[in-house]
Figure 1 (cartoon, rainbow, N blue to C red):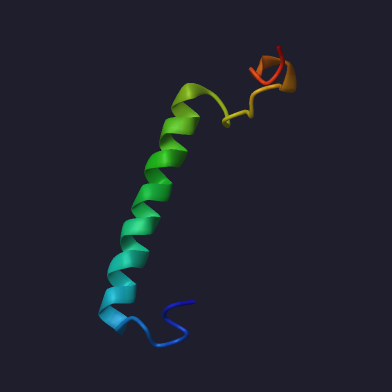
Figure 2 (tube, rainbow, N blue to C red):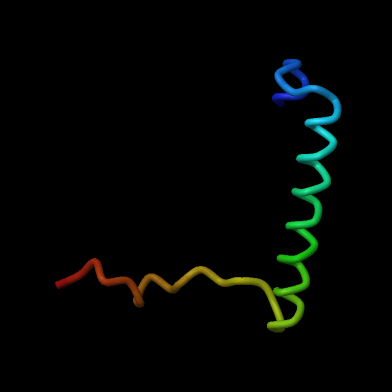
Length: 50
């Protein structure tokens, strides 16, 4: 979106896209290593009740 509005120079966009891609690869690797995707906590495990 920032690139579309010309708030970033092409080199800035490229740098951020490469960094974001690397982060995604790292997170994907960690998830595969742990054996699956993260799961949201079940409603019964929250501390909202008395």
